[in-house]
Length: 176
Image 1: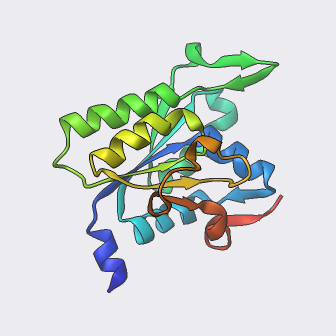
Image 2: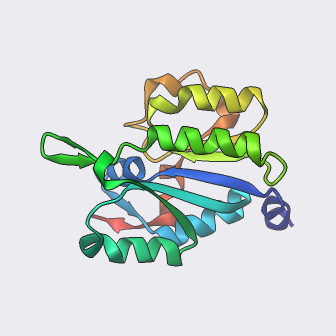
């Protein structure tokens, strides 16, 4: 019964793909995207899950992109020209894209969904998170790693935050 009630929530997930990948990798585990998508649907009533990532070499990463789409994620790419190179690491900085997407959907499509779930530990989202709480449109922020999440979330009320590490037996592959 709980599952069917959760599924009727019609929530949207916004996923910072790089934050999810790097944070879990630093903690020694890897997310099984298919299982994550099921977890979001069953536990948070997520009907649409948007996976934001920097668009890198399509030949090198086409298997990842295909796997994400086959798992039920809607991919939102950062244009290749906007990917930053920092110390020879490529960073597809999607923070502004996620905030813009959330706010335009909140304004333009407010009756088409209930609440947002954000997957990231990046403190750059704190203003968006506080705004969505104020408007009663935030379901939860899911932190990929409690160790690497921003301290800016420390004062966030407990009911709005959870750690994906707590679900890693359900959504993880195995230690890498």
